Image (cartoon, rainbow, N blue to C red):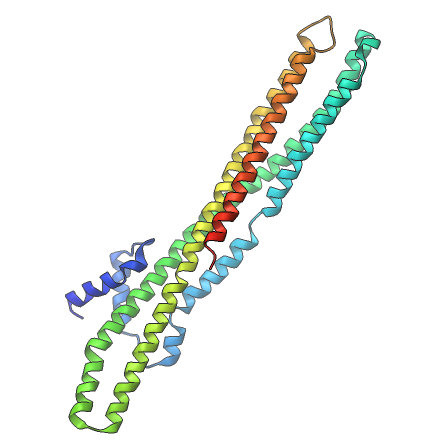
Length: 305
């Protein structure tokens, strides 16, 4: 194959290399491999590129089996439960008539109510940390899947490059030779060879078109992986903020509300402000998680065939 022909082949396959640039070594390997392709071997043609297709199927099954939708559902459930528990804690302290109790009794009563809620808050934080760790592992796994998709796309591009180079070479050299021989001999068998070889080239061309279509699958998966990973990343960051910043800040505000005025058990306004701040922070996380999941589902649906 001449340098001009190679250049034309590379231009023709440029559309298949939008997401993965082949190295010079890969291009050289593909062009060398193209010379071993026998377009008249129907078994070889039908099996051409199936290894890349198999890898896509295997990767797709692995990726979808490992999507922690149940973890996200549990996170949402835990945060909603926390809001209900906070409301119940606030209502319970509001019903308690501290004025009818002695200072010590009132303090003991409130501490008992707060300790009960704080215990639930601590348990929730412990579980959220476990789920955050799972999300971090999943984010890392999505990166590996993304890298695998890139490798598979490069493999597709090598198959397509080799196939296009072979097809162009066979149609520009072998097919004209057979046609010239048939014309010179006027023999039926030579004419049949021309027809059969032309049909073999058409079958191989169709196989390459099928591979080009299959190549879209890992591209679609890459988009899905990034959407899923984006949701996980936001949620992991929010959970860390809740457990490392918001919950400790809430506890410090309750301590301040208890100790700010020695003449009363608790400063009710500081107490309500602390509860409102916690409620707002948790609701913000819930809202953002819901928006991200909806965007993720909408984005994935757009890339389904």
